[in-house]
Image 1 (tube, helix red, strand yellow):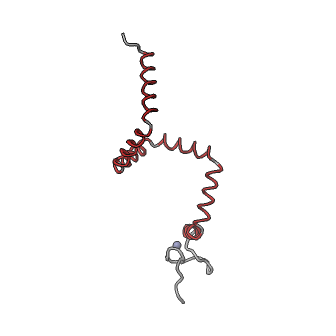
Image 2: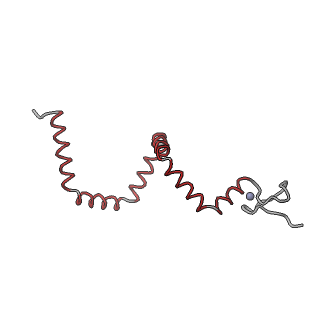
Image 3: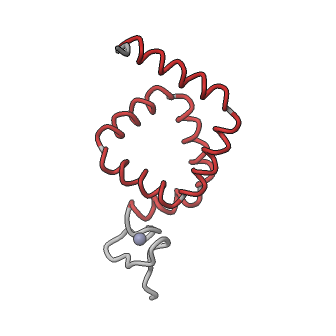
Length: 118
Ligand SMILES: [Zn+2]
C-alpha cells in the first residue's frame, strides 16, 4: 500500500477519509483558487465595480487607521521614483503654465484680501 499525499502540499493524509484528496480545507481552497484564478479575479472586479461606495469608504477608513504605513510607503515610492516624479512635474508645469500662473494670482489675491499689506 502506497502512502497517500495531499494533492496541494504533498503532506501526509493520516486520519483522512479514504477518498480525501487534500489534507485540509486550506489546501482544498488554495487548489481551487489556483485552478479558478481568472474566474475569481473577474468576479472580484465585478464585485468591486458594483460596490464603489463601500470600497471608497473602506479605503478611507483603512488609510486613516494606518497613517504610518502610508507615510512610509509614500516615502519609499518617492525615493525609488524621484527622477520619474520630477520629470512628470516638469512636463505638467510646462503644459499648464497659464493655469498655474492663474492659480498663483488667485492665491495671492486671496491672501491679500485676508491680510492686506499696510
Ligand atoms: Zn495539504
